[in-house]
Image 1 (cartoon, rainbow, N blue to C red):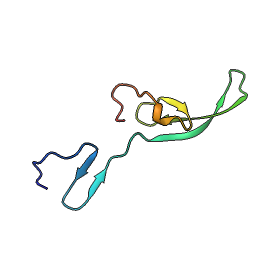
Image 2: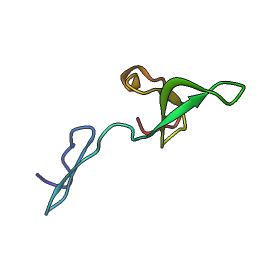
Image 3: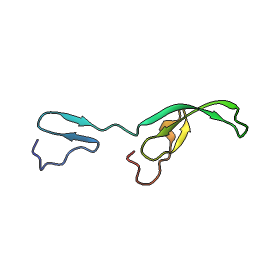
Image 4: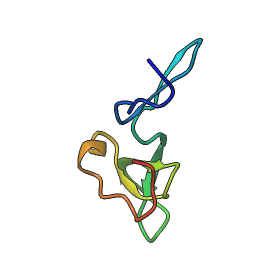
Length: 70
C-alpha cells in the first residue's frame, strides 16, 4: 500500500505494523449512589474521551458529546 492511497476508516497502516483504532474506551464500572449516599445497586461506566456516563452494559447505545473520538 502506498502512503498516498486512501486507508480504510479506523485503521492506520505503517511500513511495520497495522494499528487498529478501537471504539471509545470506557473507565469503570463505578457504583451509583443516590442523593443520600446510599448505593442504588446500579453500576455505570464513563467514556474517557468525552466523559459521558452510561449504565454498564449499555455502551452500544451511548450518545457521545461533540468532538469525542467515538
